Picture: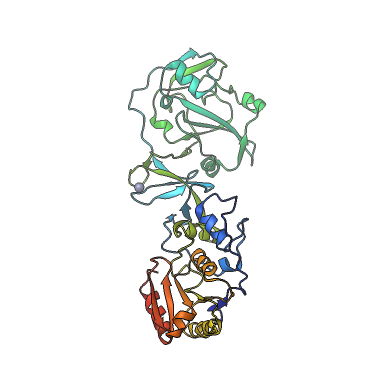
Amino acid sequence: MNPQAAMKYRELDIQTQRDFPSNMRTHGFGWLVRAGYITRESGVLPLGERTPKQIHPSIPVIANECETYFPISTGSIEIIHCPACKYAERKELARFKKSPFSQEEPLPLEKVLTPDCGTIESLANFLNIPKEKTAKALMYVRVADNRFVFVVARGDMTLSEAKLKSAVGETRLAMADEIANAGAAAGYASPIGLKDALIIADDLIPQSANLAAGANESGYHFKNTNYGRDYSAEIIADLVQAKAGDACVNCGGALESTAAILLSTPSEFYFENMLLALAETHHDEKGLTFPKSAAPFDVYLMHVPGKEIDTRAKADEICEAFQRAGIRVLFDDRDERAGVKFNDADLIGCPARVTVGERGLKENKVEVKTRKGGESFSVEVGNIIEAIEDLLDNMTP
Ligand SMILES: [Zn+2]
């Protein structure tokens, strides 16, 4: 017998709410607050604490070997994933299949006057070329040894600082005097002719011919810079961010991007997020509809206060029988109207509700109702354990 199998509504100090909280960003959050699982500040309440701590198979998750995510528009992390092969990674670390812009023969380097072209957009517009045909420069200083770090990436790509960090270690943005000392010109910088710089290039750069890049002289750019001929890098690495529509690194399928919350890492489990994911995927217009293995209780047992019969005493007996049978039961022991209890039962979302009322008891029966399908039927009091066991056995976990 599990002493925790049965709890009384008043012992758990459940406080259901009539209205959605004003700070509701998603319906799942709103129902959790209304049903008394969490506070408006996302603090887990006793009812929420009884929810089994596992990532339930009925939550559609995105996962890799290390982390499990739940996609949700309000999530604070961005995930790149492949629906075809299930590749998934945080955006800043996601890899993708890069395709060279075009196969061209290297053309002669040409210095051109490019006034007011301090950005990739203005340069591409001025030269009337796509951003793919430009190289962008990003300048940092490595924290460990103060070395000037010059990053080259294609103009249509976005640098991932997380990838840069894994390639060279911690860096900070370079300051004006450091840029000048290295021989670069802000807005017109390129790796050509730098002094003592750690040059690191994205792995697409050696495959991209004839890129426009800075001439390290204000107001001038080079056309047709080519890796290997005009400059080389100490490190070649994947340095740029993947985005939706890029080709999956494993299967070539189109990557998708989604906001998400973190459910687990190898060392941590984010229970509040798991509760939210459960609620987000398991609710209807009346409240939560948790699956059997995720619900804090199997049965919501309630009595409807009677005039002739002590329905509460009878419900108490049934509660003890459930407990002996190992069925997890929440006994709504309040002397409230039936409607109030029905609403709470719907809000809290246990898979089955058992109602002990005077009319039924006159025929020695109680009413059983499923939360999800809404089916209801009468059962002889003596058969209630068996009936609930059958019902639970036939429910999807
Ligand atoms: Zn894929």
